[in-house]
Image (cartoon, rainbow, N blue to C red):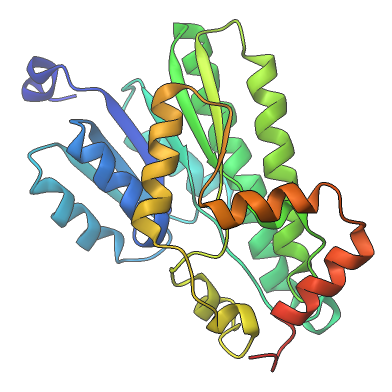
Amino acid sequence: MSAANEAAGRPLALVTGASSGIGRELARLCAAEGFDLVIAADEPEIEAAAAELRRSGVSVDALETDLSSVEGVDTLLAALAGRPVDSLFANAGRALGHAFLDQDFTEARHVLDTNLTGTLYLIHQVGRDMRRRGAGRILITGSIAGFVPGPFMAVYNGTKAFLNSFAFALRNELKDSGVTVSCLMPGATDTEVFARADMLDTAIGQAPKDDAAEVARVGFEAVMQGKGDVVSGWKNKLASALANVTPAPILAEQNRKLAEPGSA
C-alpha cells in the first residue's frame, strides 16, 4: 500500500466481474463510500471501469485475468500485495443458454469454473485472512434462479443453487468469527449476461429487467449491514417465496417457457 493510502486509512474492497453490470455498480458504490479498490474481470473493459472509478478520488488497481482458473485467481491475489481485504464482492459469473446436450461442453465448463471454482477459491483464500484478523465482509452474488430447475439454463441455475446454499453454510461456519457472509439473489437484471449467453431470442431475454444499479445498491447495503441474504425487488421476493412451495416439475416447465430458444 502506498504512503498516501496508508495516511488516508481507507478500507480496501475487492470486486470481481467489475467491468460491467452489477459488479461495476458495486465498485461504484464502494468508491462513493471511500473504499480503495482492487477490481478484476476477464475482459479489457476493466481498464475503462478503473479510469471512471479513479475520478472518485480513491485508489483503484485493475486486473484483467481469467477468474475461472486457480491460476487467474492467484494472479489477482498477488495484485493485493499483502493488503488486507475489508470487503470482498465475489460477483464474477457467466451464463449459458440452450439445451445442455446441445451446448459445447467447453463453454458449459467455463460457466462452472467461473461461477464455482474461481469464486470458491477466491473466497477460500481471502476468507482465511479475514478469519485470522477477526474482521471482514463477503458478498456472494447468487440468484433467484438457484431456486428453480432451469431447462435451457441448466448449468447456470445449478451453479446459482450451489452458491445460494454455500453462502448460508459459510455464514453459519463464520458466525462467531467477526466475518460476515451475505448472499445477493437478484432476478433477471439489465446486464450483458443474456447477450453473452445467446439468449436474446428467448422470452426472458426480451422481458423487462431490473436495473443493475438498484440491484447493486440492495446488495451493498446488505453486506454493509451484515445481513445474511437479500432478494432484490418485490417481484423477485414473491417469485422466490412461491418457488419454495411449488413442485419442481412445475417450476421447470415455467422456466422452459422463459428460456427455450425462440420463445421471445
